[in-house]
Image 1 (spheres, protein in one colour):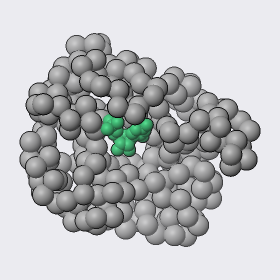
Image 2 (cartoon, rainbow, N blue to C red; image 1 turned 30 degrees about the vertical axis):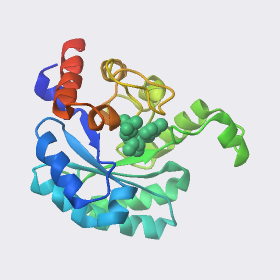
Image 3 (tube, helix red, strand yellow; image 1 turned 180 degrees about the vertical axis):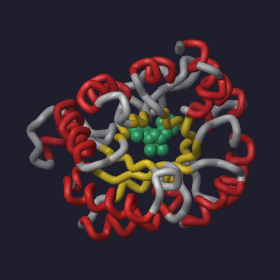
Length: 241
Ligand code: C5P
């Protein structure tokens, strides 16, 4: 894989809460990574201005708001999210087939295929364990639930899922080659584990079939973040055909 292709696979997690922080990060990392993730902390703090700030630096946006509500509300939220000109947006598959189908219909009905964001489903949060599921009355294993929800997302017209590295293979097998897989929980060989428990290197994740990698602290906390981003891209480029 070329270095440019490898850079495009990296989504930098903007886990910050100020517009100044966005300018600082997007200013140095635009062109070095493929996309920026705007999540709940940043969006709650700055709103759509956060998305616009990334876009002013030429950056693409993954809006990670993980919608989960009644179908009508999620469909409307997805539609206005798509109007922001973002590239990826997500919801919780646990909201069910009707919620996902309505979201897909709202976005497909309002935007051309070229301009619309790709719609992702979160299956089971990477922080959840079998115990977490049992506490809310789910007796299936995490893996069974992940595959079940990924299939449901695909059948509902979603473009892909967010999943931990360990689940990439199972999801590829269940949902086929065109289904997008976005993976947090990767750690380059040079980085600390932080609170990530089940990790793979970026290269292993891409080789296993991940389309995009969400990476925060290994870049943000590095002494030289630009060098860290470039090293990750180089690791991916060198380790993949
Ligand atoms: O750990 P890191 O800083 O690379 O996390 C980047 C992003 O990945 C976070 O914004 C979070 O949304 C996501 N994440 C996750 N599961 C974890 C840890 C982080 O999905 N266990």
